[in-house]
Image (cartoon, rainbow, N blue to C red):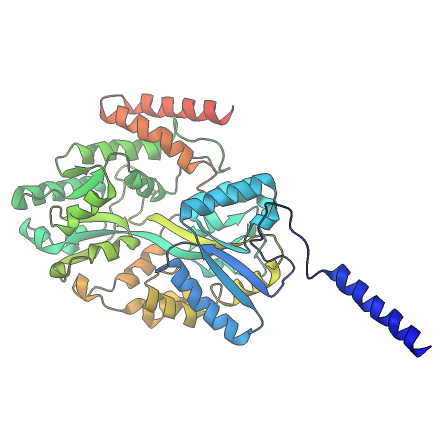
Length: 435
């Protein structure tokens, strides 16, 4: 009797073990990106070992000290590869191809949030949007819900060689709260006195247009994020006319690639750079220029009432995907990059991220003097300007519309009227989007 019961018991155990099988099977050709069935293990896709990944590693280290049962993996991909892999997984509706957390550029976020909303996990209960720079809510919020954890800022600055500036009869104080026409006049003086152009510029780079229109709280799309807003966009019209003034003023050193763009200021051939704060490491690439650089707010649009001396260029945020492990991923982000001031202080000091988490802007980490910039407190200025950057909806079609504008702006610079430029761009955008 005992042996018979033992035999039945062993058979039952074997049957249960076979049924459990160690987890769910994957279909042929699929690879699991989210470690399906392992609630304590999550995977992150991100780029840049010295920036986004370095910051995330600090967050992981802190979280796993208190949650040793959680395993967090980071997989490095180029930003373009992340976009491609997400498009494939979302369009084919294969959750097994997805990670648990992704880093996403802010300009692309609304395209994914609006098109594939069902794949994103609502973080409203884990992250307080009001704790971050206001302009970051445009890309990370959709339909009244907070889907992203705002990360780094692309707050823009006017970086200038103070030695060239002084030769032209100006100081940093003369660059405060100026408009682009005043910038042009200063650039002409610099060119006359030093022989140096003011900036390097690639014809196909629309960074100046982006900064100009966001400084007035406007973008390429209507507020719905889908309808092209080009032909009747008075701010965009003013930005194009201002851009043409700059390009025709004799203060621009034209380049055709990134390497020669950087070489322009690294070699001392130009007097200034107007770009996102992420340009600082490239500016600091030349040790012999230490102490010769200064920072000022960017110029504003002269004929646009709402334009301010602050804008954004770039930036990214973290998102949790609606896959297995999403709850622990949301808890992880909420307790680290969503709320931890001490962690952000470490990230600012060790990685150099200009964080958009407003409580850290009041800490000592944001009041450090930068000797390369003659002791200026760059982070302190960034913190002040971030509060001024208008919140805009980058919408679903930023890159699509910019591909159209790149061609049309060349026609405009070549003699086409600004009205016809924007009219034709509107028509082309509408025809392509309505196919």
